[in-house]
Length: 133
Image (cartoon, helix red, strand yellow):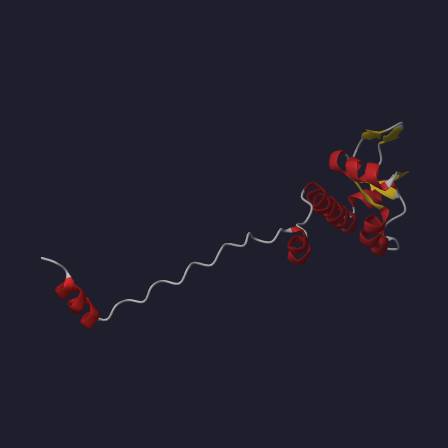
């Protein structure tokens, strides 16, 4: 997978990245790890942000980097990098339906025994009368 460098300088493996927009080809798992420590984003994300500017920027790199349009796009790319890092560091929780499949059923508790019916007041008076004094 191709990644684009957004920073000033980084070393990834045997490659030295020292220019904004440099492309590096890395396996996805290594690229994801590298995004956490270096300013890299997937090329597709970079292209979505920068391609609209392709015809509007001046030819010289210095003039291009100083243009407000480029600075705004660079800021968007850095915000995207932050979002990608957040997602890598804090993966989303699985949906509740998937959790329900893995959650064991609650234990079955025995049903309580039926309570004895309450005596009527007349029965209470009769029981009191039968008691030896």
